Image (cartoon, rainbow, N blue to C red):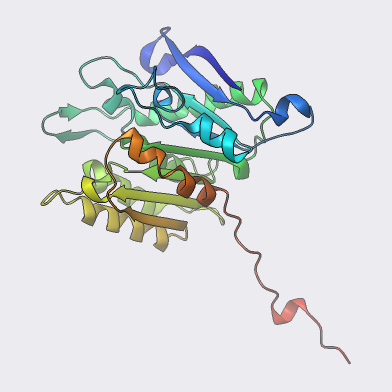
Amino acid sequence: MIDNWTIPVRPLTGRAPRDVWVYVPDRAAEDPEARFPVLYMFDGHNLFFDETATYGKSWGMGDYLDVTGTELIVVGIDCDHRPPHARLSEYSPFTFYAPPYGLIRGKGHKFMRWLVETLKPEIDRRYPTIPDREATWIAGSSMGGLMSLYAVSAFNGVFSRAAALSPSVYLTDGRIIPLIKRTDFAPGTVVYMDYGEKELGPGTGKLNSLKRTAAALLDRGALLTFRMVPGGEHCEASWERQIPFFLPALFYEPPEDPPTDDDSSDEE
């Protein structure tokens, strides 16, 4: 089941309604006691239906979850579509300058505060969620991938796992990497990050930014899966093909620490 309703993002766009799409596993209707982890995703209009996707091709998230029987609530929130660059502003935690966009004033922190303080409580009220940090995840692509890295760092007390597909770290690596290096990640924080081979381009510095981001995550103890996608491109069709990789990574359960000498006693 996929619900669609609207909610205003008041700190950024006032009373204007914003679409929310929520995928709920079928078992929720069959078992009133069932509870599920929640994955929040950016660019919700591109996730489920081709007719709402910006370029006419969605990720097909609902189809994948149905076919695989993956029991997960997925919440997709629409972005700010206003010209000229409202989405870039909303999905950047930092102000940056980049041609041909010019100066982009980062409002990502305001958006994340709204998601954590307004949207998440509403989702927990309406749906059979597991509201705890361990079952609250976040994911996105491009600028949404950058925001996912920001969310799992700046709001690590809320989100335990993040998937960042084709994250635009090269635009703000002077800010996002220092943030990661300052973050005291809680044990068991899981991060998936990938980038498409065809996205890199010569002389862009993207690969170096990605490697530095990955190194910072590893240095801070995040459980990182980092992939370069062969033939990967910057589009929904390519990101759809990564669902079988990033969702299992988010469901990863770290093994329990092996017993130490102090945990066992010698038999006599």
